[in-house]
Length: 343
Image 1 (tube, one colour):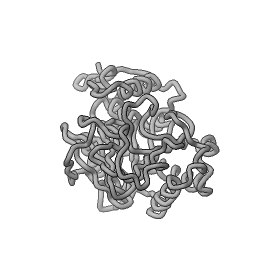
Image 2 (cartoon, rainbow, N blue to C red):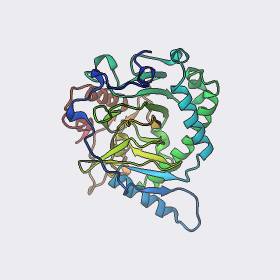
Image 3 (cartoon, rainbow, N blue to C red):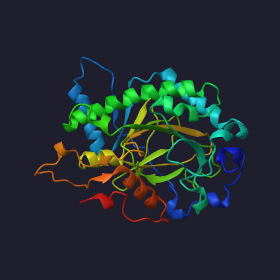
């Protein structure tokens, strides 16, 4: 438990040597906040045509691979309850978190760990602690969730249900815009997991990183954030994403880029730290179930003589193995985890 950044970083005046990133892996001196990130209003309104919303989403997915949504159906109170709950969780005494603590990242079950995928193998560590657990179906997974705070399982369970409703609403809009059959993504989104990243205040953010630049390996991600720290890369340039109160950031993952046959783009993003306030991001990930033999490939409706197939068919579990192996390579890396799957 002593490894958790939140267990030792309060009041530290300098960064430990094994948290100082090499210059090429730092965020740089200045990253401007992008005011062009699309913000899409999902509220049902007779004055707004459904097709207009679909086109806004598709354009955002094609240009940025990322957008924010408001009036999405998850109540402001529920989102505030999550902020309060996770503030309490990460500030509990370490003994209260022993039941879910792990010294390594695990792809299944529930675990609280620190830094990246393999702390013991890292040459330098990330300034974050992470709680991760599976959410669907609830009755199978809630027994493995934290027992404290006492309301955790009840409140997070309700939240997971509401985010799932929102998630499939957005996926249905994307599917309709692509011309896929109704409910197409229910067949490739059997898994729902939450990853809550906690970034304590850092005495020198210019030397440390919250998390490295990456693209999510799943289908789509919904992120609740309340402090600045998320950045995305577009056209080779990093730009910041300011939080909007009670909005979700929607992030396209690799599987959606592949299923769309390259029509939608996955977004590379990273997390930076700050010196004045802790940042806690609450991410919900939809994707194939890694425990099942799920085949991923471009949707047949999107492969034509004028739009030939861009990616191979593959087992999702094989992709995850390759994805993790790629991110365990020493920096700097070449290419992307998608390269072996391109035709």
